[in-house]
Length: 222
Image (cartoon, rainbow, N blue to C red):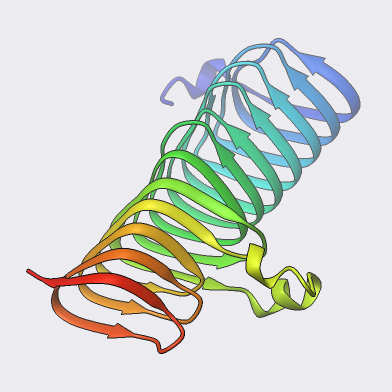
């Protein structure tokens, strides 16, 4: 992102389309379809945006829906609504809503309130997931992993408590704290298996705590 001299700002209001390209700051209010990739410094989206290629930015703030055919790369992603992408590689994510990724999703620091569907690996040095809806990932990895049910989500969806669950094949981290999670294997240094969990095998090094309401079929100290 060094050639700022060749970049200009882009502001879209209403319904529009763009070929895409390299920009400084992009602001969309309304609906916009970018037919190619978008590479910009700052991206502000309010409404519905579709990107026909990859999305590269320094910071992104979303209120609404964003669908990206390729991957999303950047430093900061914040906002609320719905994001769909092939992959996500962002240093910091703080998002409320629904995140669907057909590949891997990784960050240094990730805080999501809502629901996630990750077909690949969900990883972060610090991961906090507060469930509003059914969520899943093939695998989860990180330093500190905390997955819980949002009290607000439980209140919003009365009678659907059993569906407000996170499911994964493998969850592995240094510190793992889970609620309402179903996993084949959980592996970590300090592991807390909270209420509503159903785990096949827990492998732990230093500490293990299992809630009376949780189901753990096998536990192994390694």
